[in-house]
Length: 253
Image 1 (cartoon, helix red, strand yellow):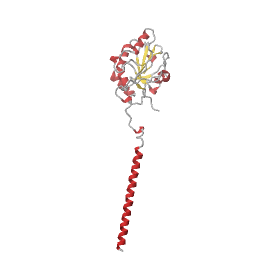
Image 2 (cartoon, rainbow, N blue to C red):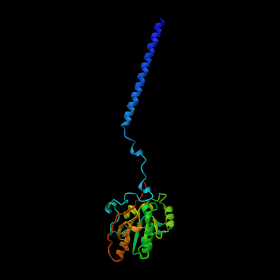
Image 3 (cartoon, rainbow, N blue to C red):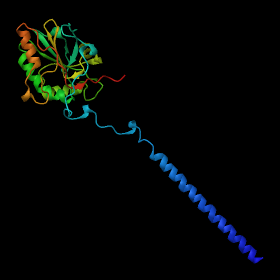
Image 4 (spheres, one colour):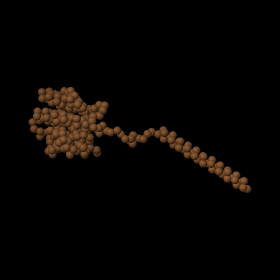
């Protein structure tokens, strides 16, 4: 009787061991299957990845070329050469309101859309000051307009006032309140120049010169050449170049 009890105990222990081993085998198999399943999966969705810094966040011009406008004048939908520009009445950094018709003895206007933070706008600030100092006495003042959203702290009115004071702007620096003026002109970059004659007809659209990075290496001064052509009673040639700079930042709806 005692032998029979021992025999049953041995049989029960063997069965327990077999069940335990079977369970371990199943667990291992499940883990292997799970690993094989994930091994074939794609990496996390692109939206979960950390994107590289946006070009506009860089401190200088991006490597590998300049950011030229890609759309044509027709695609942009602004003014074309020969169109008469609508006058505006915008707030200057000194608190006054500025319109083109209120500028005395003007023979033309160098309407320039620029801003505080764009590296290209910063590179052209001294050249805009020099351009205004040279040509405002001749009747062609620089009228700078910030087309970017005034809701942006770095581009808002207070920041514009500080930028103008720090750089010593000799020209009006106007805020495009409501961002209504830059679409009329068709400005898509900062800086973007629209040279108007005395009748506010658009005579030149584009960039200031042919080298944003280095004023010492400029070979063609497009705006200066256009003004000199008007002074001689001629049409600017070229009258259009692609603007180079940062895209205008519209307000988010």
